[in-house]
Image 1 (tube, rainbow, N blue to C red):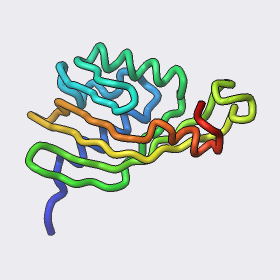
Image 2 (image 1 turned 90 degrees about the vertical axis):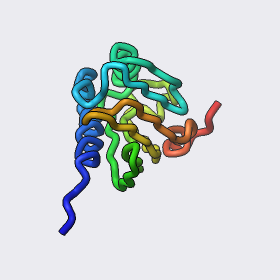
Image 3 (image 1 turned 90 degrees about the horizontal axis):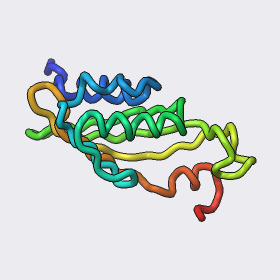
Image 4 (image 1 turned 45 degrees about the horizontal axis):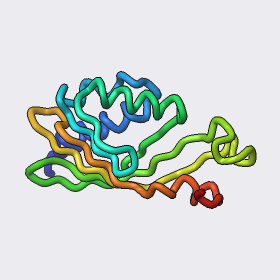
Length: 138
């Protein structure tokens, strides 16, 4: 029986931290000079910048969940697919969307060194929230 790759455990802990509602939770899993690249939200360098970006997201989506479902490993790190979801808290998508849950599928690649993530690259559709709510993106 083969032993599970510890980098998958690290990825699961990191994504549980992203899903915790606590802006400080991801810190132990990221290198201090980590780079977070989000295809929609841009590039964020270093923990303070990443935390600020994440905290702003949590202000909009306090029940944000990033649920991984598949993993692939190589010499540099771990790729994973996931489903992100949250509840619309206000009228940003119109009053009919308030209280509705949206979802977006995506993938990430985590570069790992010395037991921490040094770079996370996230890929997802910028229109997925609108699509899942059944509204046109303006």
